[in-house]
Length: 103
Image (cartoon, rainbow, N blue to C red):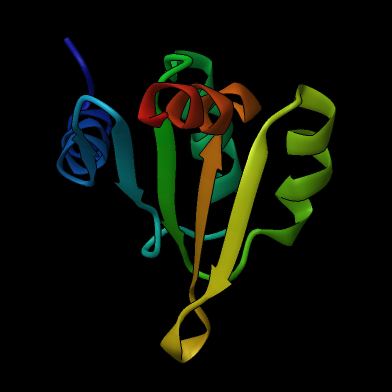
């Protein structure tokens, strides 16, 4: 049986994760470093080729960018009001796939 704090962490993670057919959104602003980076890397492990990940973070996740470069992901980082950040991550093939089907 899971410990009470494990159960509440699992519920909080589930409540902050929204998935649509093409987008996975997670709100990590309440977490402290390095947990947002670990959660983003974990979410990328389950991301389908046709999905993008949008993560809200307590600050722009600049330490994550070299890892994303090594793993071959494309991304956009935005600074939000109050110093928090948003990062959108996708497979580089998605943009090419969408352009091809739009023509």
